[in-house]
Amino acid sequence: MDIVRNFPLFNIVMCLMCGVVSSVFGAKQAKRLSLFLIGAVFFMNIAVLAFVAKEGQYTYMMGHFPAPWGNEIRVGMLEAVIAVFFCAIMFLSVLGGEHYIALDIEDAKSNLYFTMIDLMLASLLALIYTNDLFTAYVFVEINTIAAGALIMSRSNGHTLVAAAKYMIMSLVGSGLLLIGIAILYDVTGHLLMVDIHRRVEVLSRTGNYQLPLTVAMGLISVGLAIKSALFPFHSWLPDAYSYSTPSSSGILSSLVSKGYIFLLFKVFYRVFGFEFILDHKVTNILFFFGVAGMIAGSVMAIYQTDMRRLIAFSSVAQIGYIYMGIGLSVSMGTVAAIFHIMSHAASKSMLFIAAKGLSDVSGDSKEFSGLKGAGYRNRLAGIAFLVGAFSMVGIPLLAGFTSKVYFAEAALTASDIKMEVAMVALAISTILNAVYFIRAVIIIYTPHKYTDFDQSTYRAPKTMEIALLCFILLNIFLGTWSNLIEGAIQTGLGTFS
Image 1 (cartoon, rainbow, N blue to C red):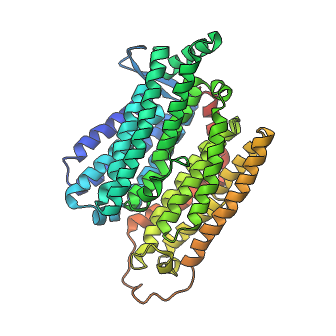
Image 2 (cartoon, helix red, strand yellow; image 1 turned 180 degrees about the vertical axis):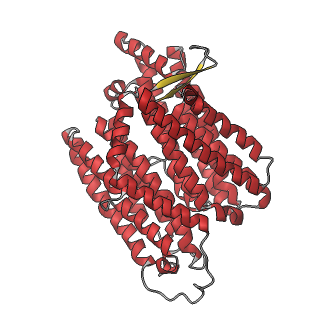
């Protein structure tokens, strides 16, 4: 079983190597290689999860060189759970939109699209597993480049503008992150997260360098908040999610922002220590912007007439939920935030792919006015959209309902003011979620005879149907077997710092 200890590093290296190989393959070979890669990495991470469940967390020193010369990977229950889940969402997103990649992207560029998929997976796994802060920054930049390429892969005016917006905002966030890391290195002399944490503890006891530490913490927090599209830094998000090919929309909405948020968890718990974060009131600021995002994102979604933009603005609200959970400053709030990363990913990818299926049977219309009756014309896409919408609203037995229960439970253990604000925000946001999602469901199930559509000749892509069915089952699993996931998250957090 000792070979399993090497799997996290093997996974990252495999993804990087496959990215290089895909760049010289043809489109079909690159697609097959990427799907095989994601599947292989998924099963390897399941083996890692089983290993840490039995043996506990471990640290892998690359080349067996100790700090400060070496680099480390740290693997625990939480990292393994998130890695398995991210691989599953990545595979289903690529599979569900595989048919449209060939339609939306020029043949000459299709292999490069899958190169970016491979690099995206490498960066996400590195953000999950690395114990080195500068290595995390390097893969943040790889993630940024890959995400920008995924957005602009369709090469039309909308996607080029969306990619430009994304790159401008994301590079601002990256710059702030790098400056924060540089200050930390200057003050502590370390880049490994645990070593930085030990030095920060010593400096906190002696009272030295408190201002530089505070500045570094603020820069890193703001940088990652910008990159994860926390309100009001969300301006790039609607266009990036709305105009991309379905696989890109699913990956961007479900995984990219969540990778940055998971890195922020690591910075809070493993670099500074959560007590340091609480002492400097960072969680109070995140709580305020999280609540603002919950409400503002939902209000903006109500005014959308394009199905894709409605789903995109909903993501602004859902990211607000995650930051609100962090801001509650209690352990259950962090558990709720991590669980919501998973429930949102399982729902949002499904919604984007289902929306494409509904558009296909409506003359490629994305406007609500052209989607009437689409749920009858593409029944599986309609059911998948219904499940995803109800999950976001918080209907029992679905993943989103469990998330909101966990947030409410966390709010009840928070301070009086935060408890009251969080409970009111949850209620208002849930009502607003219901307004725009149930309106969308009613529209796609409003009987309407679409004269330009021939049901007898339409065949939905099999890969889309398989992906949507798996997404539905995953959503129900998260909603009904959430105790297993919560237990794993609690166990992982217990050894995360």
